[in-house]
Length: 417
Picture (tube, rainbow, N blue to C red):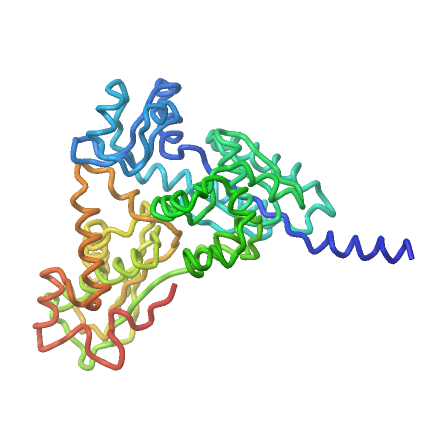
């Protein structure tokens, strides 16, 4: 009987997951400090350097003044006049992100890259061969040693608790929450610590008298469902330390693409450039709508003799039209050199990661961010072709070609994320 109980216990323990959440601390700032040690210990603001810019990232020294990401740069400088403002270099940050990703890829059997500086790793079952905490600690130390970047992690049996544990461990530290201790760990924390609780939801919970996770834990789930619907149920489960969501294997091959095969082969360069520009613009919108950034752009041309040429370029992670469209045009000009009739053209964005386009907004104005938000809202409400740049509009009139004709909109055909 004792032997059977032991076997059952071993079986249950073997089913428990070990999920690690790793997050690079003040990633942009840390990269800049690697390049210039004089920035160490000083308040740093990364973003647009003019008063019209926004803060993309800031150091812990700057956060003491109440500064946070997405704050207008003018306000941030008023709160901390002695802060050092750096425009930022997305190419540098992308390079370091790829270096960390490569270290994690080699060490983890299953990992999910959430953004340029955030990862989930599934170490379930590895405790049979290594102590999970020991292995995660060694991996963290290896990242610090080989890249020089500070990184924190949280370890627990699910994504939610691990992410919260990482936040509690920062800066440059680690925290483990043992199996069965999830509710106890979460109880004294603010409900704002729960992933997916934004500013509006937090205010709603405060209006209900819910400020600590412990209060939320003691409420019946029906009350949360009544107040916030399905979202309330999900928040209640996370407060209990329940999150069965899996770590989804990351793959650098994930991509979004579109191709256009012409009914009649063409050598009309003006038409080709207009169409490929419209493709690039629409795919950039699809990236933003899906909360993705691309790190690689590919242009494809198939000539009338069925010879196919492609050219790709690794880039800094972005989803911004004004960066992607000129690059697509440049790649097209480089490979369209045979002056033959063209049968097919296509664009692919690959090496996708989850994230917003803040990496592209280290310039001196917030107009691009506001412009994309406004354009995307119009597209969501009225359709993908409700807002099109002038060159894309031109493509619709050349040779009576419409980029949205066909069984499915060509700029959406073959789309895959």
